[in-house]
Length: 253
Image 1 (spheres, rainbow, N blue to C red):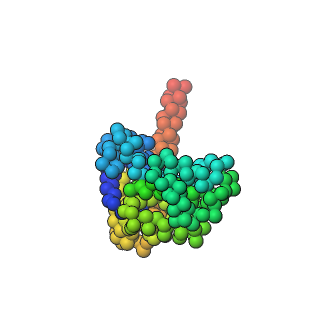
Image 2 (cartoon, rainbow, N blue to C red):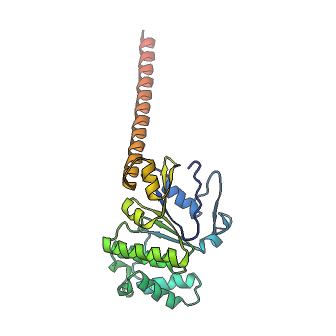
Image 3 (cartoon, one colour):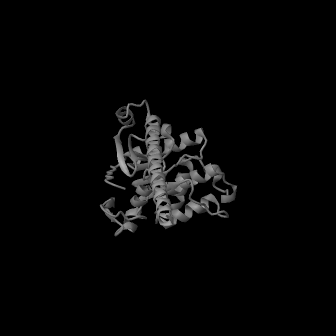
C-alpha cells in the first residue's frame, strides 16, 4: 500500500473497491489491526492500532461470508454466546432484536449444518451487529445472497447507519450493490487510491456511466500492466539465455 489515507466519519457508508490485487484485503486487515503498516498509522474510535487493538475492536463488527459457524450449535445459542462475550446488559433481548432485524427468526433453532451459505452470512451479519458497533467492516456481505435477501440485508444495514450512526466500510465486486448501499467510494489500483468521491463523481471522473465501467477500466489497466511485466521478464530471460549461448559458443571456439 502506498499513500492510502482514509477517514470514515460517524454514519458514513464507504465502499472500498478495486480489482483483485488492488489492495482491498490488505487495507481491511490493517483497519482490523491484523496487519501493521510499514509506515503511517491506523486509528479506530480514538484508539491507535495495534497498541490499543482490544479497546478499538470493542466498537467494531466484522462480517465476511467466508467466516465459519459452529456446525452443532443452534443459531440462537450462537448469538447468545456472542451477546454474553460482548457484555451486553440484556443479551437475550439483543439476540431477539437481531433475529428480527435481519429476518432470521425462523432460523433460531437451526444448527450450522442446516444452514445454506446465504443463511450463514445472515447469521454472521446479525452477530456482528449485536453490540451496536460504531463501525462495521463488511467483506462481500451479500455475495452469496439471493436478491430479495440482499435487499433485506441492505435495508437493515442502512437502518443501522441512519438510526445508530454506525459507519460502514464495505468491499464488494457487485458494483450495483455498492451504488445502492454506499454514499462514497474509494477505488484502489496497484495499492494506491485511484478515485475518491460519490459513485456519480467517480464514474464521471473516469468518463464512465457507472461504477462497473470504472471497475472494468481499472481491471484492464491491471491486466495490461501484468502483460507488460511478463513481456519484460520474458525478454530479459531470452536475452540472458542468448548471452549464455553466445558465451558457450565463444568458449567452444
